[in-house]
Image (cartoon, rainbow, N blue to C red):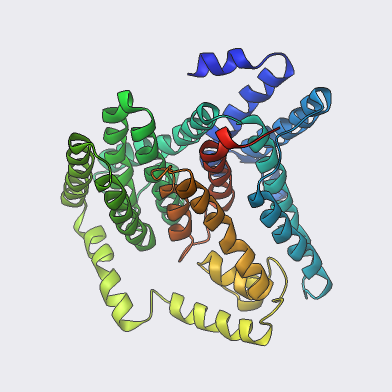
Length: 381
């Protein structure tokens, strides 16, 4: 598939494709390759910058681009309201910095949308992104074995909640690819084990809850297929994987994950309840336009641990609606074109951001690749 894809491109376009592969592969690993001192520059940032510049150059020579999707318009409106919020933000520098990050996501999404203009290309791009996530899986499991079960020990000593969140996105990709590339299904299902085990190892209760809901959704979708053998293999693999992963976990992580029920009953949610309550009180003071993009931490003194809450507080009801419309647009497109297994990705996106605010750029990049894959036969240049 990759060879055929490269034959379709030539000259500068081929170089841009290669750069996009490296960028997508490095994206889940970007926190490992930070340099530049206080500027926090990463390899993936440099690759993304080079990719964007060369894409614009190749586009000027080609003199045509793929028509933008409704998703891009909604994302642009997100940027616009974030930019306007500078006028009422008490911390305009922070707001401008956050707006710049949104603008970079927008430009990268336009470039990927134009470049990955077929389902085959979208699958290749998603596979490279999965490659970076899979490295986190394998290293996490290897470090668990070597360290003899150290508590919440994940790949490279990264934040366990970050690894848990991005691992859930990886599970949705694996299930998608297991149905798109059936001859590699057993390999993908084997990697699912490493992914599920990594989520458990992270001890991230949000990631585990997201995994449970995502699995239920995927099982429902799988049961709608007419392939009985496929149903048995995939559903059986998910149940077996979860059972084995749980049995291998250290008791401390088991107790932590089981505590989800206690936290819900007590309504403390691991101290997040207080943060969310404080955030909601601030939202009620500025319900329409919010406090300004990127200002939640500075105002509250704690991270929101929820993209939905931080967006509601910072950009008000308008910004919140625009944000929710992004994964909703991708989900509706997948269902509209009967790409039901692709719809698991926006579901995973919506789940992991409920009580976390990690993997923001990776989530958006994955959404645009999925959108490109489900709608490529129906778009024009």
